[in-house]
Length: 470
Image (cartoon, rainbow, N blue to C red):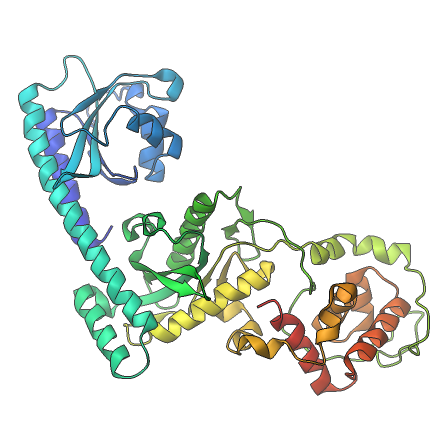
């Protein structure tokens, strides 16, 4: 909810509370909390006034889908007059409710809720309260139109071609935002958004710190969600990360996803598990150094001839790296992820900020450890890889290595390059003997024609292996 409307809603809810002598709560038609009246602090608080349903609505600012369905079963979506709902303790509703539908031009836009009591408000009081709900309805309709205007202007900024069209789009958005146009902002991308239905896109009011929200095409047929988030200061992206997390929760609800999954950045994300064909971790390093560990005088460049056979893996090495290997071979690919751009002051650079947010979301989809909410400043080499054309990753020299038959070799090569060419570290990560590692690397050279002792060949292989996920 924008600051331009929040105070108005609170005043109208307080007015209804005074008319009826009971604290009122205002929710939109999706059962998301907008405003609520204060309880009288002078007397003892009746515990039944805060039953589980009401408590959740106030604390989380929304109700569950089950609660919404239950209340809608009393016909509140079609009602034009107050509806009384009896107490139902087994549903968590310890006190009866009075629902005042908030309508505008025949369309229900929200609900005002009160706890029913005996004797309760009179008909005259309820009629007066319904006149106030008509003013709330007009305000909600006006805000919805304003939000639609902001969505249109934001979409124009993010999709306009460079030049005068982009300048005009930024000017229009600046006019629509008014005094809020000059603050520090961050752009968030959630992709792919799991529904093409505009009704499934949340209102910016329901997302913390959100100023505007719109959908933007993603690929050839999918949609992404773009969010403009106002920051407290240019050096902190916490509000943007919070908003991104809320959008991911909504996306999981739309696609029917499961429980959140914790990522490296501390956010949450969901998605089905699929096989990771390229595998290893990425610390952004691509140089190899010589390695000569205890009991092995071979340097990292001394690998067996191509016909040599690998030695069996040592159990102690495999045991210390078992969990790491499992993580590399069965990484969970999210079905939706979020990216956060670097902060900007003003609106002039929203288009490049959108490119950053989109790139971060692509990186989080390709490399689960970066997400589920990835900041552009922290995606390492993917800052460059995501800027390249998609066909760039399909280099002819690397293509044979990407076939399903050579999946393990591809994972070995990427882990080796991620580990800066350190044989001992790579073998520990993979849980194999170094002799086995050398054999696999020689097979990689045979398949690709690349020389892993050559820095440029290593760079090409490393970029191609990571780029193929994008």
